[in-house]
Each structure stands twice: as structure tokens, then as C-alpha cells.
Length: 251
Image (tube, rainbow, N blue to C red; front, side, top):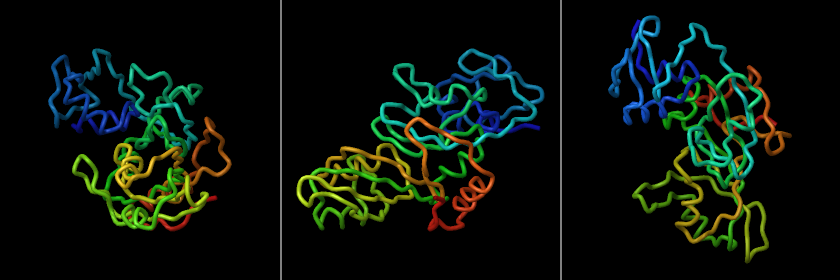
């Protein structure tokens, strides 16, 4: 039975569908010795698949794994960045199965990062239609004015023409002049979105930590630590991404 290459690679835990799209566009995937075009399908039971010149041996049954990782600052989530000093894969090197991140968290940021080999789960959590919430604790300079907070919460026009959807903003600390701490809740996941939002209204981010995704929070995890998700937590994330509500967090 033929399936799209992106679906096969993500189901095998090789990479996300987005990454597979990129590999196809760059001509780095071959089927039966021929370059595969975007949109191509394969029969996993018959066809021979190569990525970057190396054969991908397709397993008939894949054990799906789900983890929560506290990503420290200084680590990148792009696993195939040959120029990166440190990747999140190094933090989980004792896990035999290849895992990849669910979404992004830039090098200078820290906090909750989901790791899995389930491509369908990744697609469900990251797809914009799911509108799953992401909570951040953001330290900024200077202390935000009322006008800046209103602009952030209303939606911000960024330099690439993208307008961020309205965000929920709450001031949680600061000295009232030089610095402030914000809780920012968004449903999008664009590259460096919160940093760019803050910069657009004249605020400099000095620290950014993702504290929750949907109903899931970091709990007692310390930087660099990880744990396997409970079945109830996986189910809760699926419900949220399917429109089941984002109001309640696990502690």
C-alpha cells in the first residue's frame, strides 16, 4: 500500500513531516535509486528508500515513545545542524530510539520541549489548526508600559509582514522601571516569535522560558532532565490539539 514519503519517514521516527518536506525539496531522498519529487509516494513493503545517500531500513512495527525534556539554554533543536555545538539529542543520548523535537525552541531559550518518534503526534501538536497554547515566562528590559502591553496582547506586525495573533499577557514581576517579568500565552509557534514580538514594541528579552504546552507543564524537572510522558498526559495533549480546551495544566 503506497503512502506519502513524509508520512512514512515520520511514522518511522526518522524525522518530522516538515523536515521530510525540506529533504524532498533539496533532492536528498531517493526511491529505488531515483530522486523522489515532492508529493511522491512509496510502498514501504517493496520500495527501497535512501536519505542523504544512506538507506533507511523501514520497520514494520515502531514502538512509539513520548518524552518531556527541560531544554537548557545553549542547545539547539535542529538535530541536523552540522555547525551546532550542542543539540538536544545529546541530552537524551542514552535513549536507543531516534527522537526528534515537537516544534521549536531557539538556542537562547529554555524550558519545555516534547520529544517523540511519532510523526502523526508531532503533526497534531504543531499544526496551526490545533491552536494548542504555549506558556512562556519572559524577562524583559525596560519595564513594559501599558501601551506596550496592549500592543503585545492585540497582535504585533513583524518585519517579515507576519502579524502575530492576539496573545494573553500578564505582568508577574519586576522593579517597575528597569526590568519586568511577563507571562505570555500564545497558540502559534513561529521562529523566535516572542522575541520578535517584544522587539517590535521596544522591549529586549533577557530570558525566555517555556513553562507549559497545553495541559502539560515542566513540574519539578531541572534543566537537562527528561522523563517519559504518562498515557494520561499524551491523551490530554491529543484532546487539546483536537479542540478539547487548553485551560487546565498538569502540575
